Length: 237
Image (tube, rainbow, N blue to C red):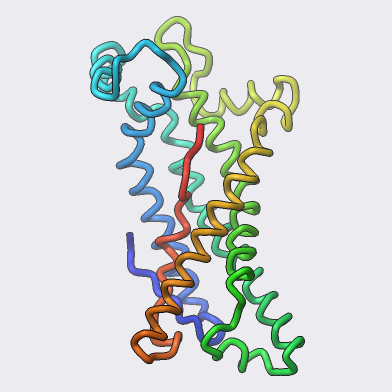
């Protein structure tokens, strides 16, 4: 992952935001390219019983479909990762700042005082901000995952169902409708992403604040590697 750093004091500069988005997107693309062969083996093992194990699955895929088969369905998540990073980054910071403003009003303090305090948000508010980021991201990540899995699990050769991501999008959108086709399974993804990102951001913030307290330093001297968070944390098929 690239080294994107955002100070948690005050509002981040525009250049810092762009660096976070760019480094997160590059890191996410690297994650997709490196992890895709492992992912397709996992998906095949989850959806069929014809393989004896992971090694047998990988061997059979290479033997019967060629090396390029390990990258089936890669284009959609590869192109979509940048947009996913932007959505997650924007949604998390929107919710975080809304909670900071709420806390400032409730405590009768200025927003800057809240931001500069050792713990600007309660832990449940970090969880809620992360959950909001996950829910927002689902709008884009759910169809991307659906397309990827369809392309990974379709028959090889003459029985091929889709000729690529665009063909897959078109057919799913018409079977029988956009919501019931392309967005099939999204309700479960909402629940998954909310919990995943909620607990992820909560755990990170807890560790950062614990480290600051243990070393007797303020939170502003610890950097937040947002790009480590902004790649999709889990893939459930």
